[in-house]
Image (cartoon, rainbow, N blue to C red):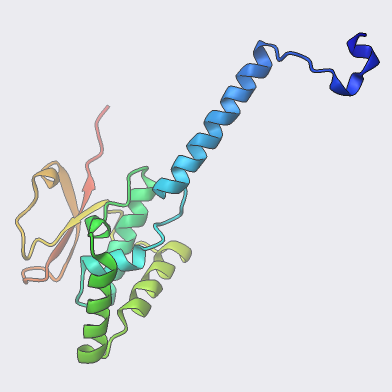
Length: 174
């Protein structure tokens, strides 16, 4: 019997090109899965609203807009989102407590504010940080070491304890 007698069982051995294509496809699928798991394929992190609230619990809409703009500028420049607050172990609990406090004491819905800021920045495409890719609460902390080689592009609430300074990388000379 030959393979021609049973064509449906005939199996052709893959050549070198077929193996290469298969390896590339497997690598692309693995990269895609890694990107989805790490959140790199998203336009912005799913829990960005929590990050905004955790970064600034004051409930100030202008601050949320500026921080969301920095996150978008970072993502657009190929950087990670940069929100340290998203790494909190108790993020959900912390944000829940802050939201409950703001609603009870200040009558402010932080979730709505943060969500609205994300929509305005990511969906409407507005930039409230003047292209900044970094920021620091300089009213509380001193100028960070990493900002020494950057230029200041915006400051919110200057010369107060609430001051936030926004930085952008200097253009490199060629």
